[in-house]
Image (cartoon, rainbow, N blue to C red):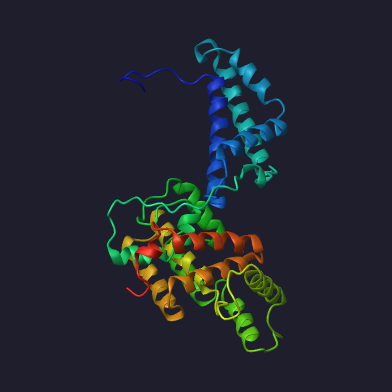
Length: 329
């Protein structure tokens, strides 16, 4: 529809191009949700690599496009040809989507070491000070995902977001959202890690605790000590902040997906706030617990380093809600 006039249907070439672009758009949305706003990552370069690898995975892609282009407009093609071409385009799109799932990226190709994490603010004034403080509890993931730290906003890719929280936590409605909030509070990824931390702190044996978790906690605490992220006196006593940050964002995501009300969302954040206040006395303590928890999550020092970079920015950047809002307010 343009200027009130309705034009004819798309040509087979246009249909194929639209299917290809839709597949790429879906892949890029998934990449953004999974990878977040990684400093220095050039999404245009990533898209170029997707195209290159798609071409390798579907070698006849150009031939498909060229052949369809010679067919001209739909007005010059009989109905059977249009139908067959449409079916072929759908199959080609399916092949493209499958090839995207099998791509092998070298993430280092997309980084610029000179870039740093950005703390974004909308300055729309929609939240009061208490709401801003509650949202600040989820700030590390807001920064990671390149989202504003001062507004609940609206998720641009709601369908992709719904699929992500369904695949991560099987959250599909209000009941399942609150079940995961409860699980993150009681257990999540912190409960077993905290048992290890308590045993280490008290010089006790870790017998009876999951061996993999013992190794993960030892790996990450050693990394934090060796890289001066903390010292022996400031090793976090709990990894619960990792789960609290996720609770705040899960509440936000569930609201954006339409599974819960705004009141539900703030109530979820209040629960996270009560637990955070009972365990920490400052944003710094909270942040270091997040750093530990994210590292222990996969037993990955890279995850720990990423979390530390984000927390360090939140503790020094003048735009950070952690500097603008008192921990105890």
